[in-house]
Length: 253
Ligand code: MF3
Ligand code: CO
Ligand code: CO
Image (cartoon, rainbow, N blue to C red):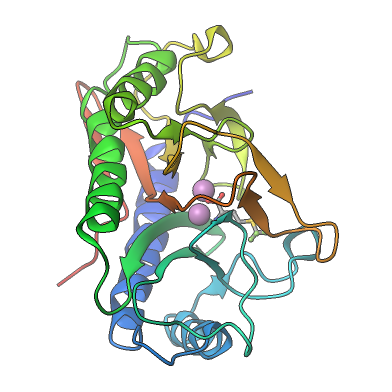
């Protein structure tokens, strides 16, 4: 069942979403060569607490940390670790989900550490642009699958691919709600959008034609590309409004 959010819920989810976005902005000053991802996890944890919020990933189905940090060939669900030290040219996705007064907001960005090749800079930019291309078509009455189709078509000319095993999700009252959001065309996403729906758009794009992924049997979480190509991701929490959409995970200034 897809939850149509009422005005009270929307107000709460908006606050949680802004806090999640502000957390990303706060962390940016600490993203540099030599930084370890466990320090980023601790900084994020403290910041989220200071905003009277709870980091949603911590203990979620046993996830051990407060944020996800996914470096290079890691697609998603990377676990922060003292031994994971950012180096020049790395790309790292930081994924933040916070709970504020019981409401959830979810957002992520991929950052380039130091100097990267033009090729890699382009790849990260196209991944971000693909998310916005998908978001821009959202409005009541269209099918959710149109969004996935748009993202898939957007990245295809670059010989990148859209990860199929993981997607976006309804969000707000719980961390992961219906619908499951595919960032590629599939009939199963032929769901008519309605005012008051809130879900994430979070394409994971591989820098190769191979969209397949592998989940670590060692930690049970870390998802990597099968062919070890780079993978990037951007994520926003989005509300379907009366005749359009609103991105909720924008930072407050
Ligand atoms: N924030 C991720 C998402 O966008 C989910 C992380 S689940 C966790 O849906 F358990 F790894 F935290
Ligand atoms: Co997320
Ligand atoms: Co999400």
